[in-house]
Image (cartoon, rainbow, N blue to C red; front, side):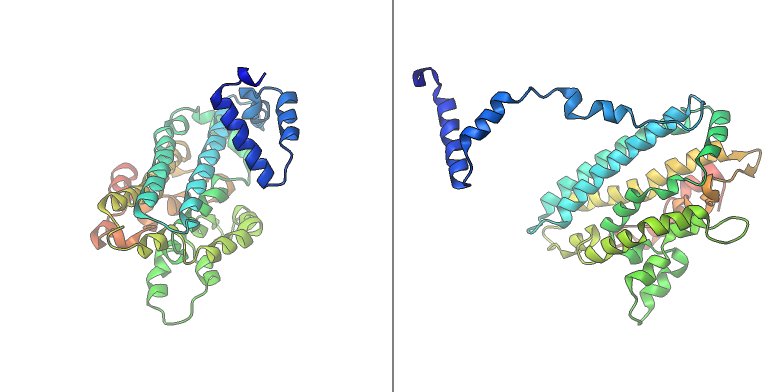
Length: 322
């Protein structure tokens, strides 16, 4: 019988035998498992039935299916981005080449999201959207925890504080804690009710659910976030190609992706000069436009003029804001 086994298969069997012997496992039991196991199918491997069961609209408006599906796709891409970020952060011997490859992957994911956002901007009926969105209250895309995690994994919390306090924190001699910085993070401004000036229920729910996790992540990567990883590299490892990849990542995340949302809000939430409230009463005009926030993950890679003009041209010309 052994004569019928090819040398390649015999070699693999010998390697498997050595592997299981060294680990104290019984190779015959594992071979029995392979013998009795069924073939893997595409639909089982990606859990297709479960995946397709997760789109559950709250109303009967057909375009709500588009809204749900696209947001779920977005969160899956966010998961892939975080997967790449963690590989950089957890690398014991980080090189510029490895960093660059992961940054390029992240940029590909963002490019897909940015280029596909017309599904949201042009792919839904406005009247349907303005009706089915009322069934979502107080939920809001503002509550995407994974996007916030991407921000924390990318840079120092100081770089995520609102610009009105950022310079003061940078110049302060006091021992500023991560909690102090977190309380002044830029996106919290978007969770303030436009009429009352109080925190919206949307923000309160978000803080209650995720603040402990956000602070834990911020503390864990205080010295190993992507910005710190880049600054820790030698000058030789900080190649022009890596710098270009990180600048593109900054633009994709903090300008282009947010401008897509600004464009969607502009299409659906503005009518005849009036502003319609976003779900959860989030203040989208103060929160989304990049020129108002000037968030950069890698501030040393940009000039003062570039920071000053951060996303400004698009906002000025499309939204006519100054």
